[in-house]
Length: 207
Image 1 (cartoon, rainbow, N blue to C red):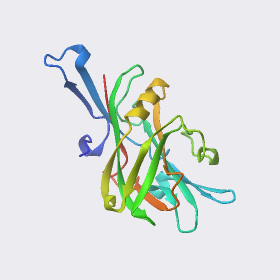
Image 2: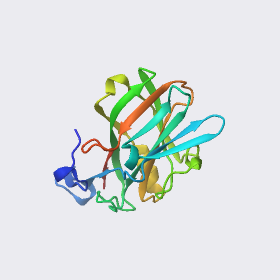
Image 3: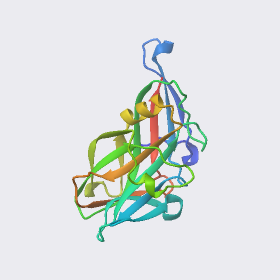
Image 4: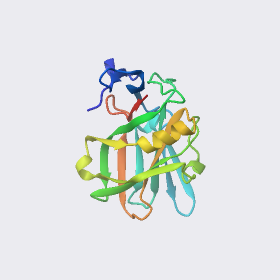
């Protein structure tokens, strides 16, 4: 279950003591941050070389996978780590204990199970470009599936390895790209990025 602050605002800051006596070495902090909707978006590619870019503050969702016309989409989510949009702060130098994102699945089409890759990849805060579609990832987490059973539900995705790498690189945003597994030939997923209470949410525990 997601834990958002009052009125759905981000910036939840919780202190927990993992040790019996709460020594400083065992103190952890949990923060949450919603994705930055004006930065979020998707890019569609139609062979032989046509790109279409959509921003989530207009479409209210993001897509990844292949549609009925053969256009392949990749979705991009930006989670600020510096509190710039009202979310919690992960200071540089913090040790990441765990991190996950929750996304709300609006729809899954053309396949009952969509094999999904999730990349850590930098992209401009000022707007996606066609070059972001196939830019080299900094790190990719292990393959997972989004299924038709997930429609109208939240899905929690472990992004600890990606968050650790973002922290190592001193990135001030956790920037993620969803894409269909390169070996797959069908499946299209629509993630909500507009309805209050369904926006993509990052939770990080650090010490």
